[in-house]
Image 1 (cartoon, rainbow, N blue to C red):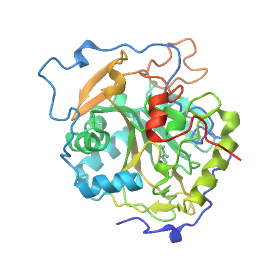
Image 2: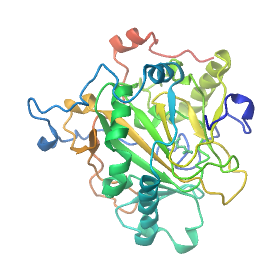
Image 3: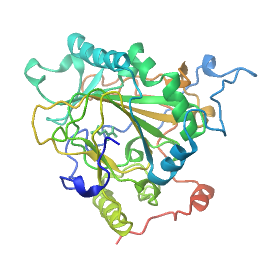
Image 4: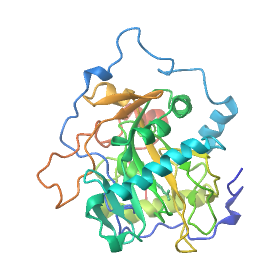
Length: 361
Ligand SMILES: O=C(O)CCC(=O)C(=O)O
């Protein structure tokens, strides 16, 4: 395995830092769904009777072994080495480079050094040396979308999610994010909290000093903290309590940090409830090119009126780019699909053995 076999290679502190930039837990800027507007469904996206593809809810795994499925259930992640060809990696790297050649006005980028969200066209030349997170290139770049949502990716996700995956967001990074430890459900929680998987594609070999991705095997089994809003979506004032809760649960369950020292072309997949973040970059200027893609499931868009288009073995969600305050004020807000989870449904919490509110000392 290209990643550390245990926590002994841990170099940095696991404790999340206070949120101060758009990439950090708590800024709220990465929150995907704007409440209030019901999404609309594209009738072309609804399969006709008898048209269901092989990927629709399967019980028998197609792409993964039973051993891999067991690892997923126990550890909450999978590493698939050499999953992507050099050509696929080059395609995504080229798409990311085009962003900076073209600086399109419809692309939202987060300056991780300034904690500033902008459209690509607003980035000043002297800002280009900063670290950026490019949001949702999948919406406009079909070459990237074809790689991130290819049939082989879809087959893996269909095995893990037992449903057709729906691509809802992509993030391109050239450097490490140094993002505080977090759960993705804090920001883009599907109606069923477990019904999300996230792919991380290595676009180059990861160096230990480049701020590798870190994660906590088994942490997806920690009973989720339910905020006072009744939701798993972050309620900012409660962030310290959430951190305290996660610290306590990790210690109690002896769960330790691992670092992903992936090789170019590797695919890492994590569960919606797996705790993860970005390690500090110890050699400034070192790159760590990667593509993160979040997938929800078709089930959660069935009743909703979401605009979905076919992608490989699944779908992609059509929606406007993330809004940028001051740039597109007054423009329609994203109508993304199911909103962030309100309260976990009673039946669901009982089935999974969670209490409504996690006790925090
Ligand atoms: O690549 C990273 O450093 C972190 C990415 C991440 O945590 C996320 O997108 O949720």
